[in-house]
Length: 384
Image (cartoon, rainbow, N blue to C red):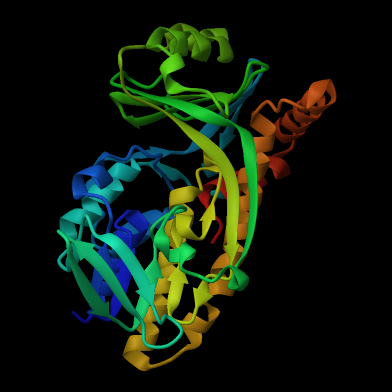
């Protein structure tokens, strides 16, 4: 087989890249090691910045998002029961939309017209410093695809970044000593907007997927096991970390999904290796506190799609040559914001009394300064 672009990974980043290329008349084949059902079964967050909303429209996948997505004009921050609303519209004149990553994936799958090969095993990348080609196995048969470019959108553990010689790659990483225990429940959200709460027992987040489905999180140690948490234990812990009025109105029920997500910050540099390009979680990981993961991946592939289109349509190398430096500039700003939100809202085992007082001082400064709130709002809704 031959195509113009081989995309490794059929998550939202890979699907969006393929769709943007498809709209521009460029052929791409996606290779995904899991089944389509598995990909759609992944439960992920879904706070969309305006840039991601605009990209969904550009990809002609926006109608259901606009019909079902929930516009949020702000968030609530709480510290030991004291709360303050950050009004995005008043501060920066923009908003975000709550629309689950699973739904983004579903919409992109629905419009896909090109070839997506699921359950592709033993994927290997070849000669990406020259004339690239990719091999994969399916049902015991090995196949080869020749191409112009390879896009690695296959996540942190994917084959794309692992195919790069270690000497050509520099990585930066911080692993946090805690994770998020998340529960999905078919109950109305406890509030119209997201609540981020710092408590001496640990962080808590009240989020949502729809007017009838809620997503809640509590901070747990990094080595915690999901099996140690019954539904009753989770609801009791969540209530303890919320202010009494919010805890009183919380509607609980049987969890329909429960999992623990570890928290880490990670960046790889550079993101171009000949004709191999990394994007999304293959290139970077952010803690979910700042709602940047999906949006950053979408920003990557928007830049990469334009670079591929420019080269294949005009034979100009300007976009592909600038890709790595252009996206890394935004990646590090998102890493900084996500680190800052994480540092403010979580409890750290070694912080001690001094560390908590610093967090409290940061919260008090934030809630008392319009300039500080504008900075938070500008970063949360998405830098241009």
